[in-house]
Amino acid sequence: NKTQENLYLNFKGITRIGEGIPPWATRATSISLNYNNLTELEGIEKFETLKKIFLNCNKLTSLKELFRIPNKENITELSLYGNPLLGQSNAQQQILSYFPNLLKLNGKHITEFQEKAKHKPTLPTERMGLHSQRDLIQNP
Image (cartoon, rainbow, N blue to C red; front, top):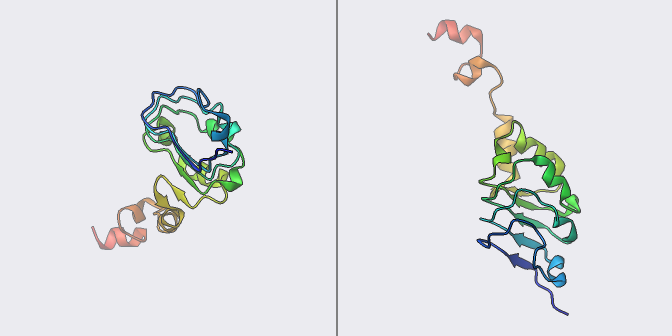
């Protein structure tokens, strides 16, 4: 009865998840597919016990591919650095809302994102370090 918690498939030139992966491997709790050529996540549905997913430096362009990840409530860590999908507007917020129990995204603890969101300037004057239009007039 072979089991492996962590499945490392970095730098393998993989274009599709599931190619050549033995059935016992689908019981992994962590999968690392960094530095491959993935454009989609078809096949990840087979990995129902995942908690940590590392997909850095692939060619993922659509956030919709993340919907293929099974048991989204179990995912505690997700890393997507170096994928074009992170360039989409509000990508980070969409990812955080889709995975309700995520503790780390792209190597950062979720609390860091929440702190940034609290202090994010909303008005143009705040982005300039001013708190009101009055400050703009008083501090040219």
